Image 1 (cartoon, one colour):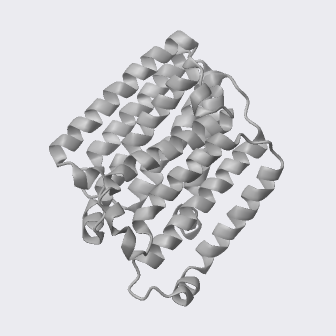
Image 2 (cartoon, helix red, strand yellow; image 1 turned 45 degrees about the horizontal axis):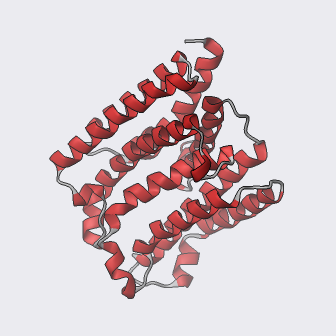
Length: 280
């Protein structure tokens, strides 16, 4: 069971489940039902994207830069990536998806990949790597709000706009926690992120600003029909994310980040779902 647990975490099945859960939560917050094929498309899309990122990263920062060595040492990741692509294509053919949100999400993901691509003429992009935090947060926000709702970013109604901003702030909190963990490795690799670009004190202030903004947006959503139970549950998740950031100031292990921090996304969706049925 332990090996299965680590397999699910290390090959991004859990993070893909978290993306699906957040997409389902978006439907609950806005009162719009989500198509099971659409949720599956988001699951497989996230699964393929993360495995592609790890494969490219492993190749780029390997001392050998050998495709043969990469394939021999990462067969499972490659299999999961191909399986996810097939699943994503199957679900896509069952849907009539809005192309604008998909194009924006895909473009942001490509920009996110640029700093780790093994091309010397892209060295200047690494100096702009501090934007990777924002890029990743925006990508997650679009994938888990606009794609499940199937609305363009320029056609969002007030409630959807607030949910979008709220999700972006939440994802920024989580992304900064991971950036702080990776700061030492990023410096060695010549990459930048929020955690390498800002000193610790400024990073603390940024986290505080994001958290306060998160609560303010949470409050304004009440005017557009979001119930008190949802507001309390979302505020609780934001507070837990802040506490997780404080915990991350000390060295933490693999489970803390890939199950604890990532798990906040899944936990957020579960708490929102429970608040509907148990009226708390």
